[in-house]
Length: 307
Image 1 (cartoon, rainbow, N blue to C red):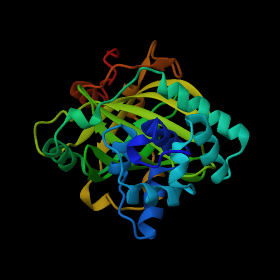
Image 2 (cartoon, rainbow, N blue to C red):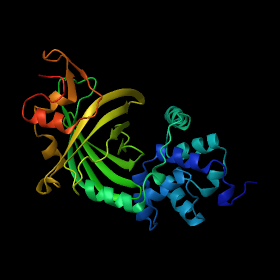
Image 3 (tube, rainbow, N blue to C red):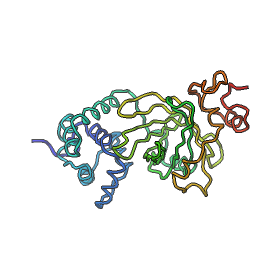
Image 4 (cartoon, one colour):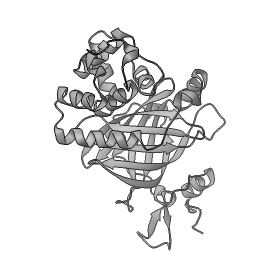
């Protein structure tokens, strides 16, 4: 017979990590709250990080939303992975794909100690500087000739995470992503994931810390580390430029904002134009500087290589 104490659950953090890889944390929290529960994404992340264990009532809230029972957490890890997939209508082929992704994360050696990077007060100060909407411009490997625009909104703080939504045009459709931005030792990490199963895509973006000393941040820069589409991960080492929207435009409809033409000068500093010939560019992975942005805006060349 299995033991039913919370502290007797083996590999609890790993089981939560797989559950949150399989099921959207935001959707789970919404289901829990609709049922009268009180779990937050921050709490789920603390479980995932091994920071603490849940009380039995909170574990039951989670299990109801994930269509499983608390006793399922006493299964061996592989059996638990099969159980939660079966309970949520995940096919065997999809289960193998999710299991492979989970194990690649588990053994990658990459660890972010987000809870240790900054205090609640520091998280609050960071959020106050970032809160609002930014238009982000970047190039991708298969589309060097055009600038892609996204709308990123830093919406709320759940220490140590800044909860984020991103909107991106794919053809005529606007795809919504949810994400979490958190502080690491030298930078900010923003991880976005799609909201629905129709567009299984994950994008990770490394953002530098806010550069201005003033209270409000007018722009951010960064590098797109990687994207995953159709379960295939490929590099996307493109520079990204994010410019804060004026207050009166922050709550405009995403489609209205994303259909605006991207500034022509963005192409100059997002790519490294080798000879000056049209299309003769490669992706430039160095972070932007103030001078590069200023030069691009004045038409004097924004990548540091143009005369």
